[in-house]
Length: 82
Image (cartoon, rainbow, N blue to C red; front, top):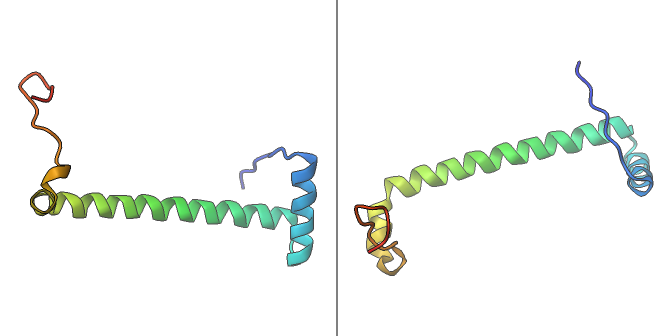
């Protein structure tokens, strides 16, 4: 299995030791669980953002009608606002 060396400050390392001790787990397991939780959170945020983009695109006309003051100005042929 691939491995990764991570450097911590003395304070961070002591905090990790204390937390691992309180939880009755190893420092390796603690750091791995924290990384796995962050990966899961990141994936969930990406999926949520994509779901929002799909929803917003599917209902763009409804949003434009409901919030006309929030619509961007029209774009001219040269790519600049009129």
